[in-house]
Length: 316
Ligand code: BDR
Ligand code: CA
Image (tube, rainbow, N blue to C red; front, side, top):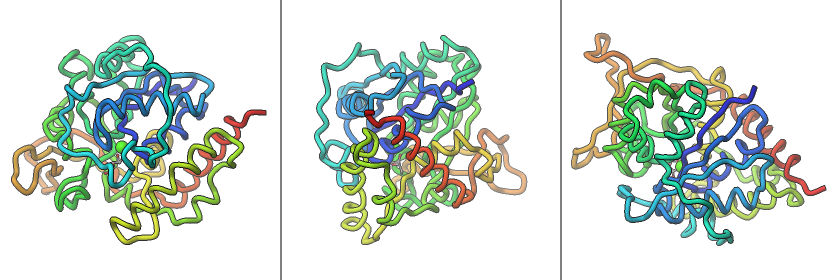
């Protein structure tokens, strides 16, 4: 039976790649797609989840959860990496937004509909997960597992010297989620950055004739340009695609249980994830943390998912 998942994301080109993989994968039943601000504003993220789904037209459509700019807690965006629309400036059209339920409510309702059976894959700042925990304090009992993309084990960040982007955007919410009793797996920056995709990825994307291929061929080249311009490298990371593989194939990752927390106030360290790795930590482990990955296996899994999504989205 397909595993029921909610994907909470801030698309974002790497989020969009993860969506292409997930929405056509028969091992997953994406029961809800919830937007959060992060790479883009709350309104833009809400438009993007729907516009991407409309463009891809997967066999089963998820429920949507949206967020409003006025409720956004995010401290940053990443438009310089992902484009003003978050998707490489392709300006996707979207019809009127579907029934507009708040992301945190959709998360709670979806989990209640199948208690114990739903996992959440969080590919953006953890605002909605913290809000869902506030809305339903017993949520942790009903969620199978939360898989989080973000944080860093060794304290080297990407948005600041010490903080990873998703944690920095809403450090308070990240802290609430870290301290909650949800069963959690964290896929940190050290692991997602271990896989760098070179320009040959563009040739290996599904063919233009498929909906997934046409969309990715329009979107992904922007990420190569922004990595070149911003970081001076000829390659890209697909953090959120790697995190999705951690949900599909945990066996491709080596993990360690650790007590983790998030710094919310430090002048230089806001959003830094802190793990107690002393031989006698004061707190009990509160999450499983991926510490390394099998590069070849994860890369193959991503390319296989995309190939399959291409085949399934070809208009015959
Ligand atoms: C994370 O930040 C975002 O820009 C990406 O979408 C990913 O979720 C990596 O730090
Ligand atoms: Ca993301």
